[in-house]
Image 1 (cartoon, rainbow, N blue to C red):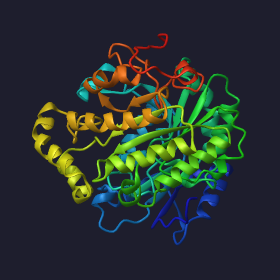
Image 2 (tube, rainbow, N blue to C red):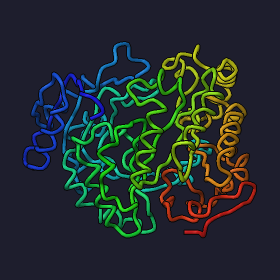
Image 3 (cartoon, helix red, strand yellow):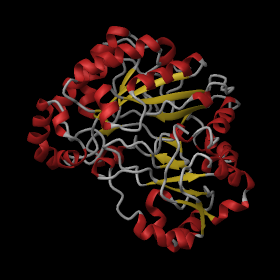
Length: 436
C-alpha cells in the first residue's frame, strides 16, 4: 500500500470466509494494517454497528481530528433485483458506502437528458463503470469519502462476471474503475489491478481505465502485460492544492512522475484537472504544472473540471478561504443567492459563477495550447453555456442533442484508437466523430 494503514476498526463479513481467494486477499491486506485486528461479523451485527458508527461521516475539511478510515471487507453480490431488495429491507443501515456489496457495476446516467435537466445543464456521458472500493484514505479537504472504506474482496468472482458486463452495451469500449476511491492506494496487497488489467488485455475492442486519482503508488502496474489495453487516469492539481488541501495524497510532481513511469511502461496516460481550486497564485502554479506535464509525459487527453459540487457556504466549511484568490472569493459570495435560485445541485455551476470559471478555463486552455495545438481538451461536468463558449476553441463542440460525441477522460468510447486520439483536434473547427 502507499503507506501502512491505521484504521481504528476492521470488520470482515462472515460470508468472506467461504471463499479461500477472498480470505487470502484479506490476509494480504491486513499485513499492511498497524494496530487493528480483523473482526468477523454477521450482517446483522454490521447493521447495528453502522447505525451509530458511520451515521454522520463528515468531509475531511470538517473533521477536527482526521484518522485513517475504518475498513469493511465484504463480498460483491451478483444477485437478482428481488434478492437485493429483500437484503436492503433486512439491513437498511448498510446503505452507507454500499456495505450491501451491490454496486459492483453501475450505470452512470450522466449523459441522459433528465439527469442534465436536474443539474441545470451539467454535461457528462453515460456509461457502465466498475466499482470495488468506496472510500479513500487520502484527506482532501473537500471530499466526503473519509470515515469508512468498504472494500470488496471477491475480485476473482468480480472478474468472472465482466463478460456479461461488456455485453450489456456492446458499443461501449472504455470501462472506468473506480471513481469512488483512489484504488492504487491499496495495491499490491489488494491484487485487483493485476486481475483487471490481464482481463482487458485479452478482451477485443475493450479498454480498462484505472482511476489512479491522486496516488503515485503505481509500481505494481509497471511489469503487467497490459498489451496497450489499460489507460491510467490521474486527478491532477497544482502546488498549493496538492500539498495543503490534499494531505496524504501524492504531490503534483509525484503524480506527474508516476505518469511518466507508466508511459514508459507502455500505458496511455491521462490527466483530469480536478477539482480546480483558484488559490491565490493559481495562474503561476498551474502554468508550472502544465509545463511539467508536457516535459515528462504525453497525455492523449486533458479534462478540466473546476471545483463545483457544493455551495459557497459549504465550501467555506472545508476550505481555508485565506488560501484562495480574493477575487474568486468575492465572486462566489456575491453570486451565491443567484446560483441557489438557479437550482445548481452538483457538477458545474457553483460555487464559482460562470464568468469566473470561464476566466479560469480560458487561462488553462491557453497554457495547454502553448505545448500542444492538437491534444483534445474536454470540459468535465460543465454546463451547456460553458460548452457553447469554448466548444469551437477546444476543437470538439458539444451538441446537447447528441450523445457520445466528445473525447474526454472516461467517456464510453474515448479510447486510444479513436480518431480524436490518433488525429488530434483542430481548434476553431467543428468536428464530430461518426454517430455511434
